[in-house]
Image 1 (cartoon, helix red, strand yellow):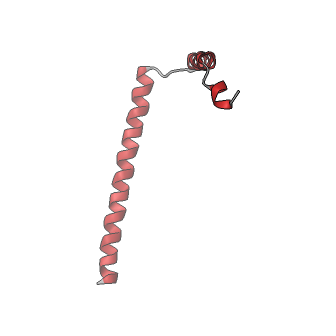
Image 2 (spheres, rainbow, N blue to C red):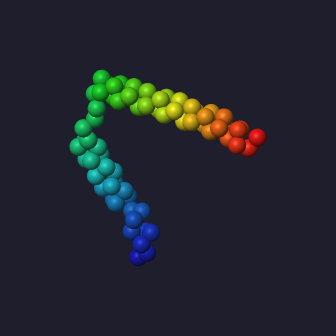
Image 3 (cartoon, rainbow, N blue to C red):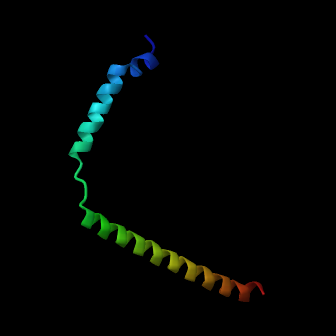
Length: 69
């Protein structure tokens, strides 16, 4: 029997999904409050980093305009 036929049998797919469901039940999902806090921190960090990159970009353009002419 070829390997592709062995891995595509319905029984193997079913057992794979059962294993997946068992693993998902082991996951400790965050509460809404924790998720909101972490999402807020991530958003703020992204905005600050974006602003920092923009400032460095502007300073480099300004500085290079003197060098290049």
